[in-house]
Length: 221
Image 1: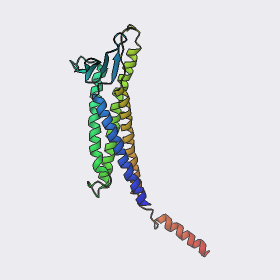
Image 2: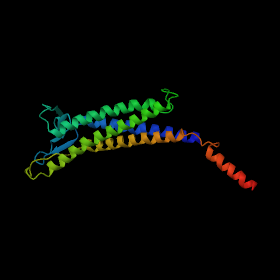
Image 3: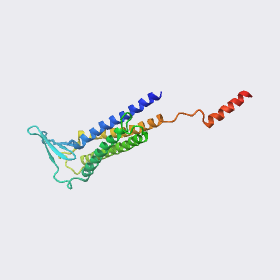
Image 4: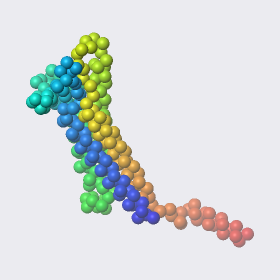
């Protein structure tokens, strides 16, 4: 029975690592994709504009896709600057979470015989994974909000093209939510490991002895 529980804990740890790794890769790719916002004009349907955190791209049927980095960092909108910082924090904390989680897994030949250290590494990894997920969801949600506000702004002429959601926003939401789930699974694995390491209930505890004496007296009577 204990072996089955141990295998379940081990599988939960690896599931948490797998979910965290996949979500981290998704967030990493999202951070550098120039597909956060898209725009096409009704007046010129052959041109499609794409905007990301680092690049602005123009796609035409004749020249294909052409990308250009932003000219000035200080000239960018405040929401875009904050989104850059948050995504970099997300990438850093996500990578560090994976590095911290690996030696904390059961079956890995590091910190063998030190369950407290492995437990601490998994908890630390879970906190970092949560932080990585939140710092991914925040910039995507902020840019999504500003895009909606600008899209429905009545001050813009109706003929002027407006930015809309790009595919990277949806992948960012997916990656951020996956990181939050991965961090939660790390804590679930820690709780399962604590349950496995519980000492067996002592049969010779004072309460058991007291009950045994009471039962013996009852039988004698």
